[in-house]
Image (cartoon, rainbow, N blue to C red):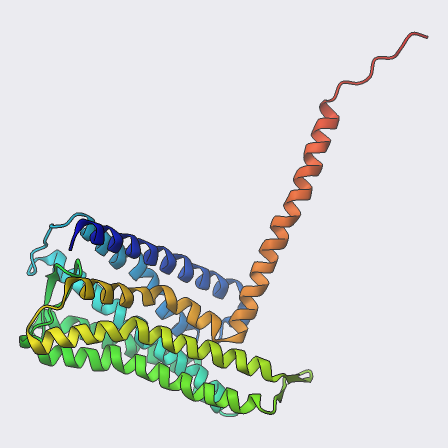
Length: 328
């Protein structure tokens, strides 16, 4: 890569890292401050938010630093490179798996509303989360045990899975189970929910809670379906180029163009910045909580201005000299 392209790559990585850190911190703050969002499946949302936050704090800045310090190369068999590859694979897998099950949770709430409470309990959610992390740890440990390998990629500026014909079995297993499978599952569930939303939009419906029933207009379902369709498109844009490049290098035994490898890697890592907005925009209760927090923040900021003016006026009045009495 030329110096200008490496600089552009570093700038894009820094932008993605900043968006991932800010977005996930914002979602975590909203979750902690709103008790109505702390459901039995909260652990799944926390899992992928913390995974994406760790990606934005460690993996993405590491790639940006390597692109600027080129041609620095890390020994592939070194502890540092092996550990970096392990962390990258672990965080990516945990993020996608947790996001997939969070989407399944929402799908269950929509399609199996009557039995949802019995299906998703707090204990089952934690058991599922433990199994997800165990699977991701096992998946990331396999290259260290000889099934696959980690190596430093000069075109990606990261220590990652070595996409060579010798590692074909591991690469196929990893792509199908840890990347393509979760992404396609999420998109399929969103597609079915869009179908349900469009079906409801034709007639509208009534939603009831413990106090009263209210009518949900058709525009609400249409907005939700548009958001879910855009979310699916973003996921496919982020991951399909990365999957294609990885499979091409694995089965052809040739290196892809450096620009294609770098761009696909950046898109895949950018998903850590998109995931917080997926959970925020596709669920009305999150949107409502975010709107309330932003409204309170705006009101507090706008209320500070009059107070500052009043305090400034009071200070000016107190420090003004008293008038001197005239001659009697």
